Image (cartoon, rainbow, N blue to C red; front, side, top):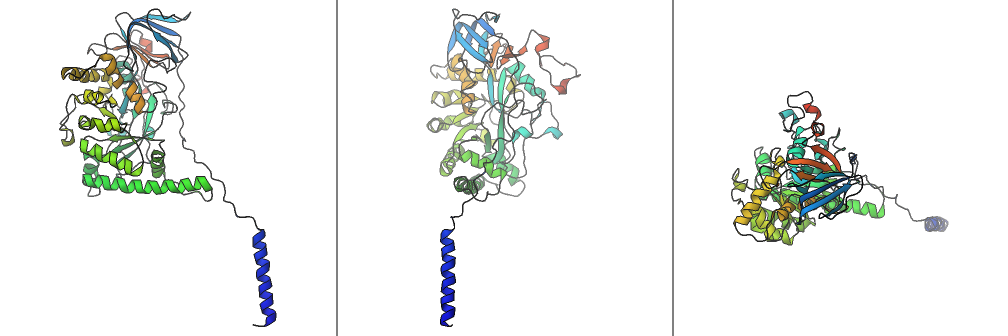
Length: 466
């Protein structure tokens, strides 16, 4: 190369270097935040009138009892709770509750109403997306049929004012749950509890391994359950890291994955884990797995062996969601005992009565009564009807992340209230009146205040108390 060419090349290199030095550093495009609530609640409370119930026995839902008590409802919320001296607002509707009981509305944290309507046929069986053991991308609300007559039966027979609809338990990851107000609406969004966090339905034990093992695919065993769940959480952590990096530095948006979106929400603490799990050893395994991957289990559902690990539930702030006396219908339910709920309560853990059934949801007060009687029979101290109502109201509200708004009769909370015609722990008791957000949704003495779903219109018995 000649001297002239060498100098020319050097000059060109210097020129390029100078240009590069003058260019500003390349900036990433700012991150675009994904809409995490594409199906928002459209719930609007029904209209109500200021109401006062006097002379009733009150269970406040947090363990308190007031005899000859007064409850005042107005503007959709509980205004005041106290004794007979409590002033009544001028113009309020006054109801004499002598011989009757007032409680917060019952909250069922485990229902499939709407996804499995009652009555229902196979074509309406929309509760299990049993096409893969990992289906966190499905949302229960997209299967909810708001005209399921089971909703009104739960209201008028059971005093249920709020309920969580879960996808079924065929899958290790069954999808998102939704929390509903038990009101008539044209759409599931019209029932959706405003601001309630989503839940993720997980399952362990017999169901996933039976459903997929019978198809010759993983999981066929309990060790397969855990292995596949761990593999999925590893993917979820990697997915979360991509989005964390994107939200921090911008640039090219990662590809969306609806399944991983749900699990990312769990890892961020925005979505609560409701874990179907029967056996004590499996609950312990699931707790270990949650710690390995950094998420929290809110509640174990159907936890028939919760009494064996009640201390673990207490120490890890996990609720036990249980039946009063279901047992023996499959091997993992074989070691159930009737004292399960009171023993979990006595250990200092969060105990909840649930239904998982369109009939039992109408009698959850009786389920709690059975558990209360079993607990008292074995000598668990300080068990009373007022204490047991926590299993039906405040504890479920805590498990759903809505206790700051409902689940007990405290001033400022939603006026979700039931007036019972008798002691609700009696088999003879029935809801006489039910309010949701201060609106009277049912009155046993007024045929015009008996909700009827579109499905029942024109059918024999329309408007009856079922």
